[in-house]
Structures are given as structure tokens and as C-alpha cells.
Amino acid sequence: MPMAARQTQTLLFPLADADTSISLATSSTFVPNMGLPVHRWFRYSAGFSADWVESVINSMSGPVKLFDPFAGSATTLLAAESVGVEGWGLEAHPFVYRVARAKLSWRSDPQDYLRKLEQLNRAANRIAPDLSVYPSLIRRCYGDEALTQLDVLRQAYEAVRDESPASELLWLTLVAILRRVSTAGTAQWQYILPKKQKRAPADATVAFQEFARVIHCDMQRGQAVTGPRAHLLLGDARTCNGIPQHSANLVITSPPYPNNYDYADATRLEMSFMREISGWGDLQEAVRKYLVCSCSQHVPENSVDLSAVLQTPELSPIRDEIKDVCEQLAEVRESKGGRKTYHLMIARYFRDLAQTWKALRSVCTSPSRICFVIGDSAPYGVYVPVIPWLGRLAISAGFKSFSFEKTRDRNVKWKNRKHRVPLQEGHLWIEG
Ligand SMILES: C[S@@+](CC[C@H](N)C(=O)[O-])C[C@H]1O[C@@H](n2cnc3c(N)ncnc32)[C@H](O)[C@@H]1O
Image (tube, rainbow, N blue to C red; front, side, top):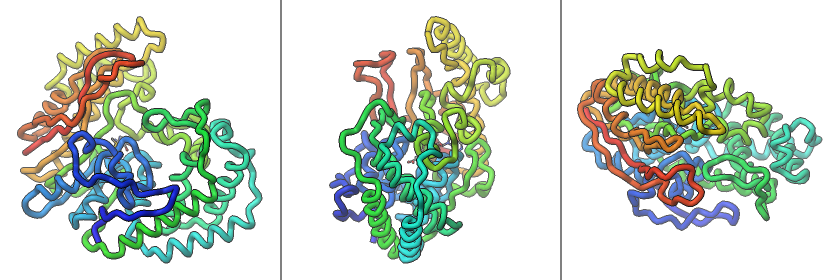
């Protein structure tokens, strides 16, 4: 049975009555995935549509070997499994990697998962809750009753955990309900806002057991799926180490956009609850240092020698233009309270992406086809022509041509916007 098959499930986790047609506008968003088995296990707002990935794979003639260097929550790799194609992926964020790896266990034995769940439930009966171990963010996001329930589940998980897929799926069952059962509101994307309260969050124990049933149900579908299992590595797109050379003839991916979204902060709630970090200050070492530079938190003042970065050979195709943009950003920041280091971020971002193109050239076959889902940006209102710059860096790395297909406009609703530069998002196609 194809993974995209729909069915009605329980109250807390209904499968959306999703429209199966793929619109260009939603192809670059994660929203349609919340109606799909397995994809719906973790809402990863940075993701794109699995149905669209399948349609791109199906448009290829001949055998496909697919690679996603920024695999995120494994949308591309699950789509590859769904249509019987070999998939490879890299993800550098340790928490997101673990989410993706757990989702890719969807074809493991559902009975093992149920047995592990039973073990956890038995262990939970013996746990004495201890709320004193949680940092203040967690205390502000949950009432005592909800946190007591969650603490019992977390401690029970720690008591029964091992290296098995079933254990990793239990971990996912727990981390994926944390936002649903929090009283805190969430901002656009994934930041948590303890001061904004939700009215009726779900009961933690009920949400956990109900979500476990959803996972079990989706795993049963997985038993009928044959074909290769995807390979996911914890690794860096800038080197593509671990990916076989000259192997991929199709790349479907979405790198971080240079729009100041902090992927490390996006999982602070979950990582704090699981006691992997004690607060925001730990994110640099635990996460950020592994990622492409796409937010100003990556580059504190004086952490980067701007002229040295701009002189790196990989940036030569865009050097004059990027230098000009960085100078404008350096000047504008002097008039801003936050004095954000966008000038450093932009230089580092394009150097990181130029390295990624070089690495991609060596893992892709010639010819190959690449789609980057990407958007442009305008920090402090200074326009950065992300799309043509990335295209030119790709050509300089050895690819033959690029073209752009817009999927949607961004930043056109001016209310409360920091700047009024119209932006777009879409598919950057690279051939060669
Ligand atoms: C736009 S998201 C990809 C979302 C994915 N398409 C999905 O549907 O879930 C970009 C991802 O790149 C990851 N990333 C950032 N720097 C990386 C690097 N140097 N190597 C590999 N992955 C990286 C981020 O952690 C993030 O998960």
C-alpha cells in the first residue's frame, strides 16, 4: 500500500482531509505532509511537500539515485522509499537527525514497538516524578500536572531505552507531543512563547498513548512496502563525507535560507525537556556549530574576519556584489538597536553554500539534476539576490545551467513587517 494512502484516525491526531493535488504554492511548505502517514509524526515547519518530491522523482526517466544533503525531517528520503528509489541523506542538526532516523524506522516491526511501549508503561508505574530538574523555560511552558505526567514518561523512557528502532520510536513519541501538551503558544515557525498561553492543551498521558497508536498504525502500513531503505548520515553538506562519489543523479533539497531563522533555537523546548541542554547558551556547542551559517547568532561580533571570508576563492563569481551588500549591511546596523551581524552572516552563508556546491559536484553523476527549494532575503531591508548568486556558484562548481521557478511570494503582507522588500520562494533547478 502506498504510504500516501489516507485513513481516519483518532481525535488528537486526525489525518487531515488533504487535497492530493500538488499545488506549486504549497510544494515548498510542510503543511500538506500533516495529512500523510509517517510525515505527520513531527511537524517540521522548515520542510517541504512529500507529494511534490514524489512527483519530481516520477518525472525522471531511467533509474534514480536520490540525495538530500539537508535532509531535515527526512521528507525526501521517505518519499524515495515510498516510490521504491534508493535515497541518501545528510543532516547536521543532532536532534533533527534523530527525528529523521526515528521516522525512517517506520518499516521496522510494529510488534517490537508495542512491546517497548508496554515496557515503558510498566516502568512508568514505578517512577517518582521530580520537577526540580527542569530549567525555567520548561517550568514556564507546563503546569505542574502536565509536567509531572511528562516527567514520568521521560524517566520511564530513560529506564527502558536501548539502541533499538523501537526505543528511538518511543523517544519520538514523547518529543513529538511536547508542543501539543504545552500551555505556551508558538510563534510563526517553531519558536516557543511562554508568555502567550494556549487555552486547552491536550492531556499529556492521553496524547502520548494516542500518538503511540498513530505511530503503530502507520508502521503497519510500512510492512507492505518493499524496495530499498534510505541511508541517513549525521553529517555535513559542505563536505558530503560518507556519501559515495559520483553516485546521485537527482538531488532534491532545501538548504537553510539566509533569513536569520535559528535552527538551533527551534528545538530548544524539546532539547531542554530531554535534558540535552540546560538553556539557550548551550545551543552553540550542542547544535549551531555544526550548521550552515544562516542566522546572526552564528556569528557574534569579531568572531569572523570578514575580508578573509570574502577573499575565499569559492566566492569569486559573486565577490564584488557580495562585498557591496556586506558593506551596506555593516553600515545599516550602526543605526539599529540590535546591531545584528548580518554582514558576517551573509558572507559566511554564501561561503558555506559555495562549499556545498563543490561537494555536490563530486557526489553527483554527470549529468545530474538538482532542485534547491530556496527563498531570497532582505536583512535590515538590504536585498540579497540569493537565487542568482546560488545559481552562479553552482555553475562555478562545475554544473552547466540554472533556472528558477517561483512557488510563492513572501513578505508581501506588510503589517508588522520589519521591511517592505518583496521576496520570493521557489525551485532553483540546476542541470549538468
Ligand atoms: C530547510 S531544512 C530542510 C527540511 C527538509 N526538506 C524537510 O522536509 O524536513 C534545512 C536543514 O538543513 C540542516 N542543516 C543545516 N546545516 C547543515 C549542514 N551543514 N549539513 C547538513 N544539514 C544541515 C538544518 O538542520 C535543517 O534541518
